[in-house]
Image (tube, rainbow, N blue to C red; front, side, top):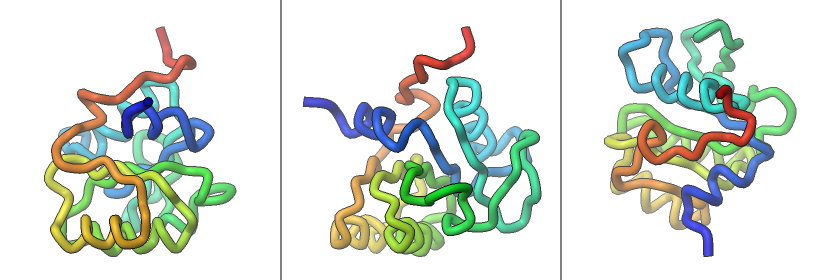
Length: 139
């Protein structure tokens, strides 16, 4: 039986959205985005205030992802007060798997995810430590 992290990386045709991506290279939103790219994945930064991050076109919200939003898995790096609304948008757009990076979850957000059947990773694991590089990763 595979772990939730293995399932997260083996699904979604290797396409990921990073909600809370930042242009500031010292912030986790930027580090997480760079981890996906550096490890061979297609990653789209999601931030309503930016046009590009790390030379990647940025989208304002999950419904603006290229192609079908439901083809993506999502990493969230937002303040806990925003996380539930991101989960609502993920559910509305048919996204099934979400990774709540450390310190973004709230009791309300976790309850919502459970109620609507989102497959979430939460409670501490971080993609920077626990992520699984793509077979297409740069060597």
